[in-house]
Amino acid sequence: MKLTLRVWRQTNASAPGQLVDYQLANVSPDASFLEMIDQLNEQLIHAGDEPVAFDHDCREGICGMCSMTINGIPHGPERATTTCQLHMRHFKNGDTIVIEPWRARPFPVVRDLVVDRSAFDRVIQSGGFISARCGSAPDANEIAISKQVADYAMDAAACIGCGACVAACKNGSAMLFVAAKASHLNALPQGQPEKDRRVLAMVRTMDSEGFGNCTNFGECSAVCPKEISLDHIAHLNRDYLVASVKNYFSKVE
Image 1 (cartoon, rainbow, N blue to C red):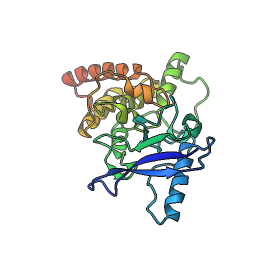
Image 2 (tube, rainbow, N blue to C red; image 1 turned 30 degrees about the vertical axis):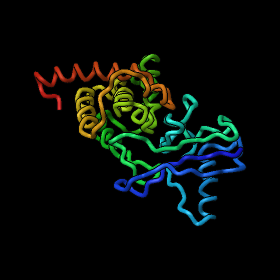
Image 3 (cartoon, rainbow, N blue to C red; image 1 turned 60 degrees about the vertical axis):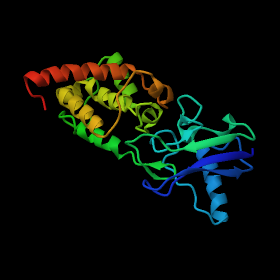
Image 4 (cartoon, one colour; image 1 turned 180 degrees about the horizontal axis):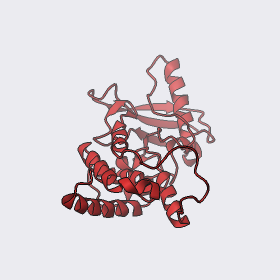
């Protein structure tokens, strides 16, 4: 295929950026989107130009590093698919593809398509640890957990922290991310002793990092490559309300 790539170029966070057009030929429909970017960078290097900086690591849809807004949609047009798992067969010969970084105030651009997502790290860090013993593996069924609860926690734990939910939200809200990270611990017996403190701390850190409020439009869940449900946001709101009432009468932090 022959494509026109309209790529966001920006040297650093304080410098102004712009969209730059590149022509790329001989793109295999079997190539992944990141392999196509690799091909573009080889072309730029041979021409003596600066390659496009972009985040990537496992390229298996697990690490959450790949972070591109493709034609206005975080991770691109395919549902439940990360950028690295998106293949060029979903595009047509002659297409113009607009490639931008995540657009959110808490995710400042580092260079080109690379953004700083350390705000997510600080939210997770504020949640702390569980106080349950973490030595050798426990015997099977030592702690009774129903399949429904285990599945719910596992669905939340599937979050890879890519930030697509924030990039898609018009408010730049991180509620889906925070809800998933809180739910997979709060739902299980091992994480419940710290549930109230964890919820209050994570929500407070989320707000201090500059993430916006949730207005329940659902764009976050629609673009989430792991299809995290909005149910987790409802669960987080309920846990936060309960923890706030408890904290008013008796400090839980």
